[in-house]
Amino acid sequence: MPHRAPGSPRKSREQYLSGKPIRYYRPRGSAEVRQLIDDGFQAFNAARIGEACHIFGDKMLLPEHNTTIGLTVAGALTPAGLGGCIVELMERGLVDFVISTGANLYHDLHYALNFTLHRGSPFVDDVELYEEGVIRIYDVLFPAQVLLETDTYVRDFLVRWGVNGPVSTAELHYALGRDLMEQHPGCEQYSVVAAAAAAGVPIYTSSPGDSSIGMNIAYHELMNDSRLMIDPNKDVNEVCAFILAGEKNGCVILGGGSPKNFYLQGQPTLWEVYGIPKGGNDYFIQLTTDSVVWGGLSGATPAEAVSWGKVNPGVLPDTVVAYCDSTIAFPLFCEYAVGSEHNRRPRKELVHKRVELVEALKREAMSAKREHPAPAEAADTMPDLERHR
Ligand SMILES: NC(=O)c1ccc[n+]([C@@H]2O[C@H](COP(=O)([O-])OP(=O)(O)OC[C@H]3O[C@@H](n4cnc5c(N)ncnc54)[C@H](O)[C@@H]3O)[C@@H](O)[C@H]2O)c1
Image 1 (cartoon, rainbow, N blue to C red):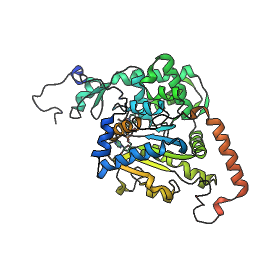
Image 2 (tube, rainbow, N blue to C red):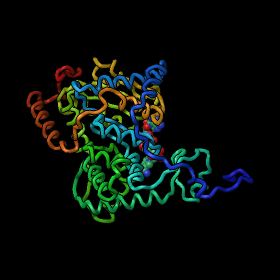
Image 3 (tube, rainbow, N blue to C red):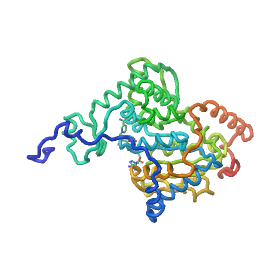
Image 4 (cartoon, helix red, strand yellow):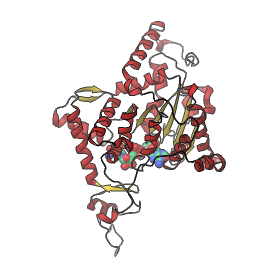
C-alpha cells in the first residue's frame, strides 16, 4: 500500500510546519463569555459547564470557605495551548496545587524554552511526517528536534541541580521551574512549570516514569551514576497533608487518568490508612470526554466516589461532570472564573509548606493510632465522615 495517494505531491517539512504558532492563551474574564454561559448554555453538557462555573466562582472561591483547590490535568492540554489558562489560575491564587501527567509538563517546557509548536491538520501522512522529522499530537505539529533539545535541557538541569537522593515530584518541578526562570528570564509568563514555581504552587506527577522528564531522569541515573530518586511516598503524603489541612477541599479535574485518582485518593488515604476521617471532598468538578459506562476510574461519577469516602455524601449538589472536550470547556470555565467577583485569592504557596504539613499529618496519624490501635479490625462500616467537618 502506498502511504500517499498516487499522484498527490509530497509535502516538505517546511510546509508541514507552516501553520500558525500555538501560543498559550490567557483568559481575561470576558463579559461576553460569561453572558454566553449564563444565558446561552441552558441544557445538556452546556448547562453542566455553567454549573461548573457557578460551583467554582460562587462557592469554591468564596473567601470564607478558604477552599484548598487541586487541579488535575490529563489529555494533551499544554500542546494544545491551554497552559496559559493554568498559569492564569495559579497567578491569581485560584488553584493551590496541581497534579498533571508528565506529558503535559514535558510539553510545557517547549514553550518555556521558546520552541514553537504549530497548528496543523490531523489528516496528514504520518510516514511522511516521520521521514521529515515532524512529530504529531493530533493536529499539533513540531520538529523532532524540539524533543531532542528539550531533553538536552532536562539532562543539563539535572546535572546543574545536582541533587542525590529521594525527592517528591513537587521538589523536582519546583527546582525545574526555578531553573527555567534563571535560564530564560520572564518565561513564567508562558510556562506552567515556571509560573508554578513563581507562585509557590506545587506540581505533582502521578506516574513520574511516564514522560520524557522521567525518561531523562532514568538516563541521569544510568549514565551519570546519580542517586536522584523520585519517591512516590512523599507525593502521596504531601497531597494527603494538603487535604488534611484544607478547611474545605475541592478539585477541578481535566480529563481523567491517574491524576484524577491521585487527587481523589487523598481522602481514603486519610480515613482508610491513617485512621483520620476528614469527611470527603467538598467540591468536585470534572471536564472530561470519559464515559461512565466502561467502569473505569476516569469516567467514574462523584456519586461513585461517595462510596469510597472520596466525596462527602452531603455535598453531591456541589459536584458536576461536564462531558466535553476540555480544550473547549476549560478556556470557557477560566474566562468565567477570571471575570467572577472573587477572581483573586491570597496564594497558599503550599510548595513552601510541604514539610510542616506532612509533620502535622504525622502527628494526627500518630494520635489516631493511639486512639484506635487496629483500625483494620474495627467494624466493617465506613467511619463517621462527619467527625472532622
Ligand atoms: N513525550 C512525553 O513525555 C509524552 C508522554 C506521554 C504522552 N505524550 C503525549 O502527550 C499527550 C497527552 O498525554 P497524557 O498522558 O497527558 O494524557 P492522555 O492523552 O492519555 O489522556 C488521559 C485522560 O484524559 C482524557 N482526555 C484526553 N483528551 C481529552 C480532551 N480533549 N478532553 C477531555 N478529556 C480528555 C482521556 O480520556 C483520559 O482520561 C498524548 O497525546 C501524547 O501524544 C507525551
